[in-house]
Image 1: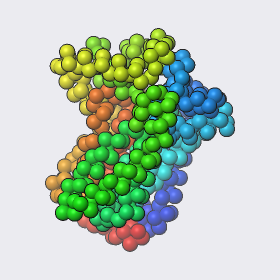
Image 2: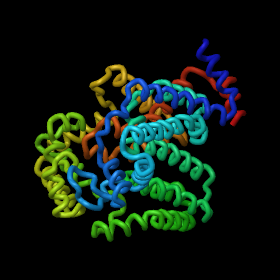
Image 3: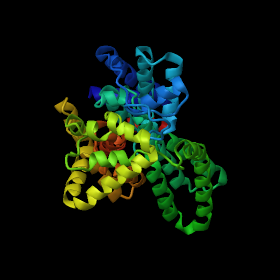
Length: 428
């Protein structure tokens, strides 16, 4: 009863106050994790950070591997440029690491703060968004993913939330004006500069929206063409840079060959951590293998990845049964990863996904808008991860989605539309 009264009290807050509350809770909890565990003492660098440091210190957007290899498109430019600015201003030691982690915590906290508003925008009860926000704020199940800032993962989660809102607004309002197409194109262009892996999701939404607007297909084609042109304009500077720096007009990233080869071979496992412990990174990845990095420098990044991709494809063709087993294992790892550091975290994530899939199935059966939008994201976003090894980081961007669907399911099952929810709806 106390919990219900507390939730009801929260519903009396204005949207801004509610967002500030969730942001503050999430930020303070994660700040406490930083203060207690001091992860900023670990200055091990991965490809994105190495590229940012190279850009900050030498002006070269490159050198992501074990030895200097020159210009790169291994990582997307958006977050890399942010880190490069940070390293340029504050150096590359512990001070910069602390600031980097606080930045990551801020983005994660913003994502959590927006959950009630996102829930309302896509058709889920805002009380469910509030509860989901409180759960994520108070229990960081994947703290290093949210805190380290080594990768753009928090930005990816935030981007998927805004993609869902954008789709909901478009599918409700059926707004095909030119200004809307330009706005959508700018948003998607910025997202793809941060997270090139979301390009398949963008293409999927364009195709699905064509079906959604099939009665106005000619007008929608005009809308989609403008949207695609704007996205292309946003990506053009990156493509031109890659053409002159790498000799090929790379649209997003060059690392597909590396990731597929390290994930599909005689020694590979579905779990990224297991592959690391068994030495596959030292054997196949130029970040850990100076020998492979030398090959990148000799062949060039594009050619090196082309050859790695051919090796991966050949192995897949000649080992179809093993590839199928690895793919099933990667699907399991994506949705039901076993965290070796904590049984509680593992059970929490499994419970969230079981409830989330149940909530998604119910929403789809009832033809609700949130089921269509979130179901599309849950279907398309993970697909590339089923082809390469999986860790905790890969599935984090859809944790909010599954939690929201699961809590929405429980809220609908256990309670009618409550007075507290009416208050929250009125406040919004």
